[in-house]
Each structure stands twice: as C-alpha cells, then as structure tokens.
Length: 491
Length: 99
Image 1 (cartoon, rainbow over the protein chains, first blue to last red):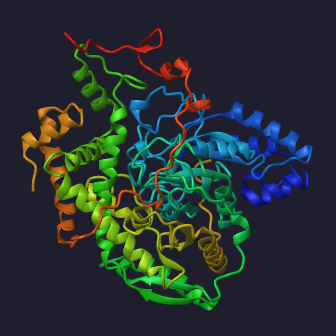
Image 2 (cartoon, rainbow over the protein chains, first blue to last red):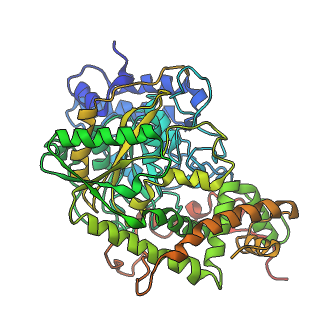
Image 3 (spheres, rainbow over the protein chains, first blue to last red):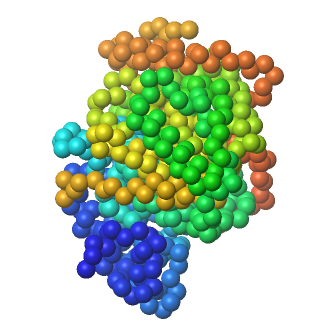
C-alpha cells in the first residue's frame, strides 16, 4: 500500500468514499509516524486513544454514507486551543497541569465536522515568538535542513509545531493562530500553506488569549485546497466571541478555480527592503511574472507607512498581552509558588511561570499603559494603526490582491537571532500589517534557496476577500508547481 | 525616553513579576532597546486621527441579561475550581489578605 500519510485531505476524502482504505488505517499510519518523530519535538502530547476511537466512529459514519466534511481526517491542534479534558499549556510553565473543562469553538467545529485529533502541537510560549525557542517544552525542529548540514533549524513561530508537523507529515493538517505572522511565517519556513483569515472570521473563544485585537485562528496545510477545506470548517459565527462576525461562511473549496485572469495584483514597493536577500527578491519577481503570464495585471503600489507597522505592533500586542496575562496569578489555575504574603506569591509565581520573552513583553506592555506614558505610546500607536489600515484600504480600491514575500529570510538556526529581540521581531515585517488591519493573508511555498531551504510568497486581500485570495493562491500554486520534500532524517 | 534602574523595578512590580537586582541591568538594556526602536512612531503625524481599537467595523452585540446554558452558564462550581492549585468547598484558597 502507498504511504497513507502522503495523501492530502482531498485525497483522503476521496479514498474513504471509494473504500480504498479506512480512517483507522490512516490514523494508525499517522500515529506511528508522529510517535517516531520525537527529534522534531512537534507534539507536546499525543492523544492516541482518543484518535483511535474517533477514527472508528468515522469509519462507521463513512460506512453508513454519513461522512462529514473532515470525516476521519487526522489533525494536530496547536496547544493554544483549549481542548476539553486534554491538558492545554500554551507551552508555558505557568499553565502546568491545566485541563480545560470546555472545548474551544474552532476545535469543536473540527470535531463536529468529523476531525480526528492526534494530539497537541508545540508553540512559542503564549504564541510569543518567531522561532519556537520560547517554548517551555523546548524548540520544535524544522524537517528542512541546509543541504547536508545537521544544524537544527527553526520551523518558524509561533505555530512551529503546526508547520513542522504538517511539513513532516505527522498530521494531515493543523490548526494555528496568527497575531503578527505566526501562521504565515512558519508556513513560509517549512514549505506549507498557511492562512490567516479576516479578523472575526474564526471565533477566538477558548483560544488562550495573547493580543485580542490581533489574534486570529487559521490552518496550516500541505496545499491551498486543503487550506480551503480546513478554513470552511474552522470559520463560524460564535455569539461567545463578541468580535466574531455574523455572516455566512462560504464553501472556500468552491472558490479555488477560475484563475487570476483580469485580476489586478499590487506589488508594494516599500516591501523591497534595503539589503534584502536577493533570492527572496528573485522568488517574488518569479511569482509576479507567473501571475502576469496567467493574465493578471501586476502593478506597483505604495504603502509608505509600512515601516511603522512593526513598532505599532510592539506597543499594541504587549499592551494587550499585559492585560490578558494578568489572569495568571497562581490562584485559579496552573502553577503557584507559595509565599505567606499574597503579593509575593503573585510575583514569585509569575517570575517562575513565565519565560524571559513573555516577561519582557509583559513589562513593555505594562510600561506603555502606565500613567504618564499611555498617550505617548499606546494612544499614538493606535492612531498610527488607524492610518496604516486606512492606507491599505485605499490601495485595495485599485487592486484585488497584494503579492509580497512571506518572511524576510529562510529558516535559521537556533540561537542565530535570539540574542537581539528586535532582530527576531523583524521576522514579521511582511506579515504584521495584515493583523493590524484585520485583513486576510496566505503564504504559499514558492521555491528553495541556494541552501535548499523553502521560501514562501504571501497574498493579501481586503477584509472578507478570502475567496479571491484563495483563487489567486491556487493559481500561483499551480503555476509554481512546487513539489520538493524534506529529506527524512528524523525517522 | 529611557528607563532607569528604578523604572525597571517599578515596571516589574506593576507587572507583578519578581526580579532580582542582578536582572536589572540586562532588562534595562533590552527594554530601552525596544523602546528606542518604537520611538520612531513619534515621526508620524497623527493629528485628528482617531485611535483604532478594533479592526472590525461592528458595534458590540448585546444579549438578554439571562444566565447562559452550557460551558458559559452557571451552576458549575466543580468546573470553575477544578484547575486551582488550592481549593476548599469550591472556594479558591489564597494566603491571608487582610491582617
């Protein structure tokens, strides 16, 4: 039998319908493959018993002709999504032993559509990081390497467990979240497809909160079609999230075909950074040419405020995080470091429970919100954010999509960027604007650099432009014909 | 604007994170590095621009003031307290707050 883990969601769905193989067989294949891949450190915990019983139930439904959209599809769940009765830690020591008594809306939607849960995926602590180095459980490793070098590289972050697991075929698809680029940057570094939907498209209920005005869930998958299938299930209107949008969820898979003929696609000139890697520039130009070849009109556009997006983000996100993470006080859940004085108990618990990067961001957030600095930092950042969103909305009056690189470089080694926080933050330079403006973005694998590492291209669309964005991404994917796979050194 | 040693200690205290005196110099450097980087926002003219608090252009939905059912409903003291480090009869137990 061919390796069942090589099949996409669409192929599994067809194979189940044709009775070529069972959900139990596919689930077993994934479980044994994932259990053997400990070197990648992608899963923080696996749920084999749950997965097997879900697969059995799926096979029964398939036999009765009652298959749901994700029936029997083995999925990995980023450990930022609360899963009922399955420990959830957000890769933080401070959430030790936390077992949610409820299921997040997104993961419930996947269960309702027949998904099989293989386990919880590693991430940067509270999704704060771009390399997975801030996880309490140690970094996830990228299946891709530089040529024959054995240097361990990052799979990106914060959804590094999701990107590594999908890339190494340790699950058919994974959930992820994106606050500043945490779906699209890891997808770019692992040759996977990552979708950040419009803010409000997926419910945030039950997702451990980082920066509530920016956080958005989305999938990481092998190809664009699988991304569309996953997003159709993950998205919903949810009264439990007051920012969730009440409008029908399209069948995104139906939006894939049709191509880019007649579309107008913008190339933002400010995204061409000084001293940018020439290979990224070349991949970007190739993507633009391929879209032109298929009948799209590619035009240069200007977004002069681009350079302010990251500084705005590093005020708004830590400010919101400092408020959201105030709940970790050693009283209601997780770690408590004992002290007879309650204030000392709070401070010791948070000092031991939070890692260095989280502490750094909480302190920045606390500072920019503190008396005397609120107007100079936080209020100003929110105003610049408004100008950035308006500037993007203006550009989208004249173009359908924007084409940009997904990340400023390929995968890097552990420790190579972690010494300087700002150098690490620059990973999100191409992705963060979409979070500030609330618009959707997708990263598609576009090529390999000279060292054999993947590079991604990003398409951005106006709010609720997912269907146009997916059509563009499918056309780009087809034209690029990217089919490289990492060498399997970890099995 | 740049943070002094005592500013760093004050911010850590406001954030309820215990730090030692040894942590102060490197925290000060890191925080000042980040703050001087975000200082560039002062260049942007924001006169008359409203502050953006949400990217969603909808007003906050309201619901009837009744106890919800399901996960967010009442009557679940066991679920509410089950993850707490220390509880007694469905109460959270903390060190003495009032002398």
